[in-house]
Image 1 (cartoon, rainbow, N blue to C red):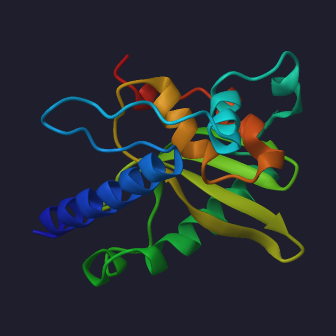
Image 2: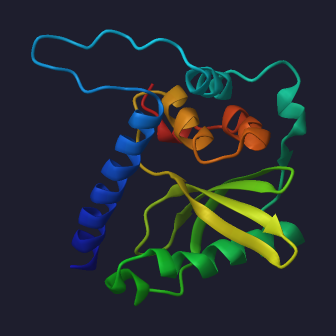
Length: 180
């Protein structure tokens, strides 16, 4: 029963996230008479495009963090501690949460992206945290679910990061999130 509540909540959250991403990218719904004309390229469009294609050498700025390292353990603990507050009351009761697998922890400056799955209740996702003087602060879910392309996932993740950390979206492996 808890799983069905999660799926409906997850579907609604995913739809809200996707509609926000589409709006941020200037996407417009199609009409029965055909797709709308393409909007002119704006500065926002350019920023998203560069998130999917990193300039030469940009990925050198991305630090990979071993999940079982001291820093990786702190990042994981911060994420697991923050997640219950973001869930429905039914899923909050399933806490404490535990990782099934942590596929990637990548960092640029103070920004961290974690790709992980969980043992119970929660679906896999890409999560954003930021290092602060008081440890790591959870900034939100950057992606969950499948996409038609890796570029769509990268664009979605890039939309949750400040410009200074866009290399994270461009340089992480998002193949498990896309069908192409």
